[in-house]
Length: 373
Image (cartoon, rainbow, N blue to C red; front, side, top):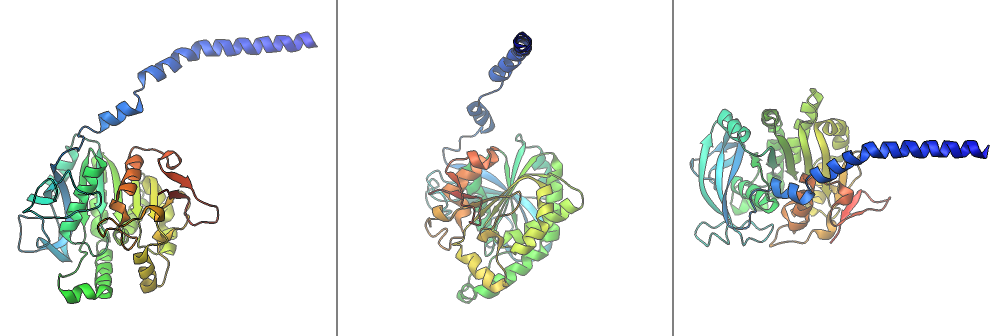
């Protein structure tokens, strides 16, 4: 009996030896022929973004065009939806000495310290898509801003995000008619501005869905980054495309402080999951803007930290420190250093558990993870 067992062990060892003989060359091939991660990142990021640069920020806007047709300042496009979207490129000077999160614009000051506009190129939809398609990079980042954001701020913010992420592909800002007149009365009447922006956001769902369908048909890897009330534009549009049978047309869907009804979000979540390779949601229970929105709308907002199946929900409350007024409401964190550091890793495809400064949250908390201070 013992002899039989020994024979079996010898037989099994021989099988393992034979298997290793075949596997070792394959393992060596994988180890020595696969580029190291550092080499992959260096190859991906051709431009180091380590000095002041003038960047192309592609724009699609449904804002009604104003009198200025060759610039990208706040007088270029207004606060009411135009039936026909406008397409083009804003040339934006990104200062190498800017503080992360700050987007101070001043065309008369030092270009190394202030954001500046350097011109605008108008295109039509076909030329716009051709320029995106002909880009050497396979990646495209689409940014959709939130409530009370003027056109110029949206463009500069998109440029800042591209520069600070060292993003190698084209960046497109979809600017819907958010914002308000510059008058004191308009600034005070926040509730009326919110209601107007909310209406415009819902009007923009159909044109955004068309744009997204067009840009995702180019064969590129599309990352979609959204902030605040911009989710009112984006989420129903993305869900509608998925419901029509379009699947995995987004690589990364990154949701920042979504001002979107929690229950409505849960209703469309299965369709959103079909649309993307991964969904990341940054939330904060200390977001005063969302707390105010909850009072106005009578329902919790998706960005107030709740767990959702298949979504990486990350609480950023610990790192939400105001930078020159940015984030003072606990709502503008999406363009800050800690969040951009995490988004950088998201775009590299790193899983949430393996990213820097991430810890698991408690089982009774709303989020899955916490971004550490």
